[in-house]
Amino acid sequence: MNKVIQQAHELFKKAGFDYAICGGYALDMFAGKEIREHGDFDILVYREDKHRAVQFMIDMGWDVFGRFGENGAVWQFLFYKVEDIKDSFWDACGGVWAIAPGCLPNVLAKIDRLQGGKHEVYTYKSRKWHVQDELEFIEIAFDGKDGNEYVASENPRITRLLDKTILYRDGVPYLAPEIVLYYKSGKGSMDSAYAKPRTIADFEAVMPMLSDESKKWLLEAIDTTWPDGYEWLDGLLS
Image (cartoon, rainbow, N blue to C red; front, top):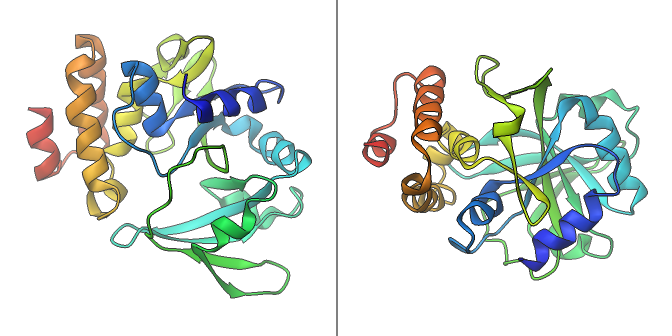
């Protein structure tokens, strides 16, 4: 198994809450091979465990940054460092980035400080990340759960039974590929010069591997959330 995936699993399995590898690494786990190189690492945590997850990372010595806003054309975000989970300012974040102990200087080389003060604010632009040989930073995404169903953050009408949402390889949980592709079909991927070619490569590699049921779910989810479609995406889905 990929070393970074294994390190993430070793970290989170002692956290006491549910999680799953997502993003491009989840597609690798589904395919049983590396589809392409990855410049980031993503973990899914249910929204009900959001505070626990952030506090866990802080307790483990990681630096945690709340993420605000997005300009897909340049893949630009605003961040501020989370010092206290009781600070409601970060609660509006759609996700957080966690940076491993001792790795902050490397990551901040790609993040510009905008201002100091109570909330240190930074901006990250689409400069290429180096491929991680060791687990250095994690993007933690927060999604919903209602009973035995997963609820997508993009659209609460998009649901999936949990036993079809979280899959396993060698005991490591990962997000089902159709859900990963669903998120990759969004506007941020379409408009980003950084993300779009990677998304196309993921669709081309993984779509032929999906079951008919998974493809049907993906197509219906995309059509429900983005009914106008995207020209480049229509070609892939056909």
